[in-house]
Amino acid sequence: MAPGDDGTGDRRGRRAVGALAYLSVPVVLVALPLVPLAAVLGPGGLGLAGPGAAGGLLAAVVVGLGGSALGGPLLVDRWIAGLPEADLDDRPANFVADRVSTLADDVGVDAPAVTVVRAEAANVAVTDGYRGSRLVVSTRLLSLPEADRDAALRHALVRLRTRDPLVVTAVLPAVAVVETVALLATLLVGRRGERTAGDRRVNRIHGYEPDRDRVPAWAYTVAGVLCWALLSPAWVPAAVGDRLTVAGGRRDADAAVARGGGDERTGLGNAVAFASDAAGAADWPPLLDRLSFVSMADGETGRVRGTSRQEARIRLARLRSKRAL
Image 1 (cartoon, rainbow, N blue to C red):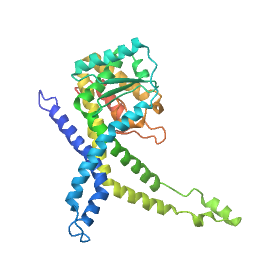
Image 2: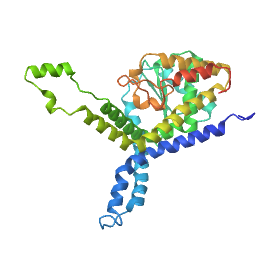
Image 3: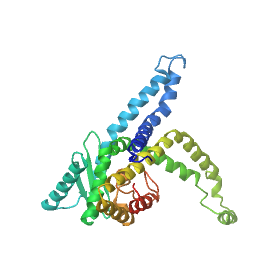
Image 4: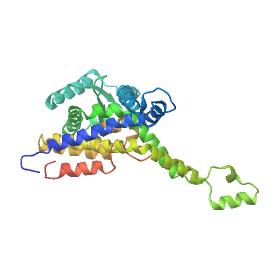
């Protein structure tokens, strides 16, 4: 990097690529069935008058992007409404709102609406969309020391300034579909017979052979591979968006907060360390994971969304190093 170059241009370029990849996910999901159907029904297909493949692709852009952008904020708001709100008195509630407003002025964004939820997870998420921006913060994160708490809140507000939450919120329905189908395909590929060879021998001794009517394991593997093959055009841009928009956005926000000074950098490192190690992941909805300060591992699948398991460790190592982020 040349002297005086803080890498802002590279970061913006990565965010732009990630945003385009993310925005293509709902389009691809709709285009997969719609474009072939439009091609068959269009000029030259079955002798019928129709839009053709080009028209189908245009319809996929409108329906996919429009539907996901409309549904994303509604889906997020529904999940937030189902979270247990913290029973704060007027004074602490006003303090949280005033503190977020003060930090938002420092960052240079309009103060979002604030929802404080009762959760053991030390986390904060920020959403954005046509229904307005909202910051969701847990009571446990608010209990951190002032410097650590403010650094985490500032991190969320910096992401709001870069518009990453706007893109992520808009594509959440489509990304959730990709993630669900990918998990299903993985489970199918890894499915094995429930009975061992010894069990089958015992069954045959007693004159009972249940495996005759069972679906063979190879059939599940074939079905899973087919699911992955069909899903790959949407999964690839979703993975790119996860790395560049979500994980990359967190790293860029780390750098922005760290530039505020040594106290901010130390506070952010403390908050990342505590949030990633604290219990209570089950209290934090997986849907908010990509919009959160720190990703929380899913209790059932053991996986995280929008990043890797090592992301928090890498972020912490960078924050505690002496070099510029």
